[in-house]
Figure (cartoon, rainbow, N blue to C red):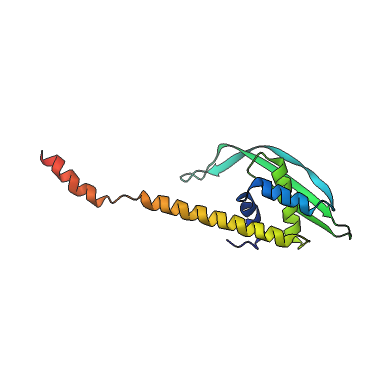
Length: 156
């Protein structure tokens, strides 16, 4: 997973401890002005999918969703915007990820620390992916062995 692609930042930051993301975002912006382009929100969203046979839409159910859109103004007057929409009911996390998005997208001071956090998230995702592959490999069944065992039962 490429840590330099903006589309991956939310997933990578969600793989890191929530407290780490929130603390770093707060630490980096303590001398900056933060303005909300829209107020952070938290609630439920409907997950809409399409069935495979008729391609008709249906709603799988509700999922928690939080969003934030922020504007950062640095002491030297530089202005940067960032936004995030995450599948969790934590408004503070959505705001912190939106701040991280603004910093990373505009190479603001502190983007090196955030890049290290992205790399940490990539490491967690890689490890989780490897664990899932190992679990999947352990669950494979050799059905050809069942044919040989089934013949004994039919003869009795």
